[in-house]
Structures are given as structure tokens and as C-alpha cells.
Amino acid sequence: DFLAGGGMLCLLNGLLALSRRRPVERFLPASLFLLGGGLFWEGLTPLYLPRSVGDPWDVLAVWLGGAALLARAAADAGEDATWQGHLEAGNRQLETLNAQYEAAKNAEAEARRAYLAADGERVAGVWDALPPEYAGQPVEDWGEAVIIPAFCDLHIHAPQFPNRGVGYGLQLLDWLEGYTFPMEARYGDAGFAEKVWKAFLNRLWAGGTLRFSAFATVHSQAAWRLMELAEASGLRGLVGKVNMDRNSPDSLREDTGRSLADTEELICRAREELKHTAFILTPRFVPSTTERLMDGLGRLGEKYDLPVQSHLAENPSEVAWVRQLHPDVPGYAQVYERHGLLRRGRTIMAHCIYLSPEERALLKEREVTLAHCPASNADLASGIMPLRQYLAEGQRCCVASDVAGGHTAAMNRNAAAAVALSRLRWLDRREEPPLTLAEALWLITGGPGAFLGRVGAFEPGYAFDALVIRPVPGD
Ligand code: GUN
Ligand code: FE
Image (cartoon, rainbow, N blue to C red):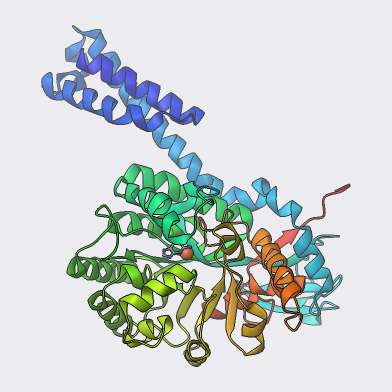
């Protein structure tokens, strides 16, 4: 019997959803199909329960099916609720934040036993003694805990989350073909996207990353859903639908006009409907975007005054490929510039390992934020960014995770990786002093915060995003 079968499968689905076992999604289409088919077949009569007592299986099926769907909805709601609980309860990762603890201890700006006051969502100030105007206000004593600005991650690929740690026997271009593109092709499936987006946002919460700039995929619907969920999560984020219309697999390659139209639609929708999540233009990188597409995106950037994110000079084979594709342009960065994609003070370029002096001058002039992704650069054997030189010449810099080029979204670990790589680089270049922990901490807080606005430091008027880090006794 269709209805009985559908009802039972729905129930099984609901129970599995509640117990959070894996095969949930596989049962859902079959059970909904059977239940729906049964209702159609039997002319909806079982819904009129008193009249259908002649067939108790039908009645049971409808009730079971309904209960199962409610159970499933409850399980989904439970997943959403974990966002709010993460910083309170689930945050085991931050308890191992020894590197940042050291950094905070060393930092010049450290204030011991100080008062930090918030005025609504903004920092009011940090003082050794409580100013008289705060007398009588509630004060919470955090004891031995260290309080630092929350982390920001300005370069992360949400759809690559399931690929963390996978494929690092390869280098960039083979890794993209072999692992990244096949994974990103799956986001035409809304159910899959939903699951990954929730896991992604929960992980950011759990790691203390309260602000981010993320790549989605080419799929408009999935990108929009990520924006909606980001808005609901309480985090603050920039999200971009990826654009790619050349040198890409059939499963991801877009029609140029369509890519631009979809992008503009998302830009407008995000402006109308969202408050804390905004759109960021996201051409994947030069090899996968035609000049017509880059031009169109540059125009959208002007029209809506948008930020831009992309990749630049990550790997020698990639750089050689760009030279081959654009022999008439002096360098990789100049290709973006030519198409209006180095928007002054509004652009994030990830990696920036292999740059000419002219490209460096151009990026500085355009006030581009250079996102150093140390875990990714090590995992994919891409190279080591000359971060010390960039800092010395006054470039805007931050450290980012580049999941899943990098294996972890935990920004404390990415900061530690930045220090580690800088120390290895120093072995061959003694004139470039390695990064200190205090600098690394700044590169995951104040550095990226400068791109986002008044964020990433306990300065008056800055957003009050704070992490309270308790030392673990005996650890
Ligand atoms: N270059 C173009 N696409 C990607 C990507 O997804 N990850 C990394 N690390 N580099 C890229
Ligand atoms: Fe990346």
C-alpha cells in the first residue's frame, strides 16, 4: 500500500534525522514520493479521518507521515539552534589556543586586569580603572581568562568544506580538476548544499570566526541559501556566487550572459532582504573567466559599489598559464586591473606569492588586501608569500584559511602556520625577520578587520566582537 509504505519511510526518516545518522537524505525522496503518490491515488480521502476508518492502515500512514515530517523539521531546527550555543558550550577548540594566549601576553596593547566596556554593539574603551560614569553598571570578572577581538577569515570556500584534508598529494591546477571542481559540481543539489552550509557556519562559530568573506559556487540558488543561513546565524559575512565561463568542466562552466544576469539578481536581492550579509563579486581567477565576463563584473562593481575577491599568483604553473592567456598584459594583477576588478580599498586577493615589483606597486596603490593563506600554501606546495616584505612596504595584509586549499578553518591554527612558514623562509633569507605571534594575532583580527570597517580591535567605536579564552587547568 502506497500510503502505508510512504508513512513508514517518513517515520524512519524522521527517527534517523533525530538521531542524526547519515542515510537520512536517501529515504526522504522515496518516502515523500510514496506518501504523495498514495494520497493522489486514493483521492485524498484518508485526510478525512472519520470517513476512512474502513482502512486503518491509511489513517495510520497519514499520521505517521505527518509525525515523521515534524520530527525532521525539529531535527533541522536543532541544527540551527546550535549556532547560538557554540561560543558558550561547544568551543573546545579555543581552549587549546595557547599560541594566541602567548600572543596576547606579548602584545604591546595587552591590558592586565583592565576594564573593557561595550556600548551596545560597539566598544566604548579599555581602562585600568573603571571610569566614574560606569559606576553602578554591571561588571563581569573573567578572572584569568584572556579577552581578544574575535577572528575574521577573509578567504574561505564554503563548498569545499567536505574536502578539508583531501588531495594534498597534488598541486593547485591538478587539485582543482581532481578534487575541487567535482565537489563544487554537487551544489546544484539543494539538500546537499543545505547540510554543508550549516556545518560550515557552525564550524566558524565554534572556532571564534565571527566575520568572513566566502566563495560559494556558480549555483545561484545555493549561493542565495548560504547568504540566508549566514544572516540567520548571527555571524557577519560577505558571500559571493562564483563566476567561471572558460577552462572549466562542463558541470561548472557558465554562459557569460547568464552568469552576469544571475550575479546582478543576487546583488539586488541581498540588498533588499539582508542586513548582516552582503554580496561580494567573486570571479574565480583569471584562467576561468573570459575578458567579457571580467568586464561585466567590473561594471557591476562600479554600478553597485561592491567589494571583490579572487585569487592571484598562487602557483608557478597558474602564473605561466595567465601569461599565455594574456600575452599582451604585463602581469597577472594587471589583468584584473584592466577589467576594473582592483576596486580601491574594496578588493581581497588571495595568495599573492609570485608578484613583480610593478604588480606590488599596483596592489599597494589600489589598497588591495593581500590574503596570506599559509596552511593552503603548505598543503598544496604553492610557495611562501614574502609577507615580511609586504608588511614593510605597507601593503594591507591578513591571514586567511582558504579551506579546502588549507585543511582547517581554525584561525588560531592558521595564525600559527603563518608564523611557522615565516620562520622557514627566514632560514634562507635572514634579512626577513620571521613573524611574531603578536603580529600573527593581528593578521587574523585587526588586519582583516581594517578591510571590513571598524572591526578587529578594542578601539572606541569598533564593533564589540570578543572572544573570552580561558586557560585550561593543568594543560
Ligand atoms: N584558484 C582558483 N580556484 C581556487 C580554489 O578554489 N582554491 C585555491 N586555493 N586556489 C584557486
Ligand atoms: Fe582560495
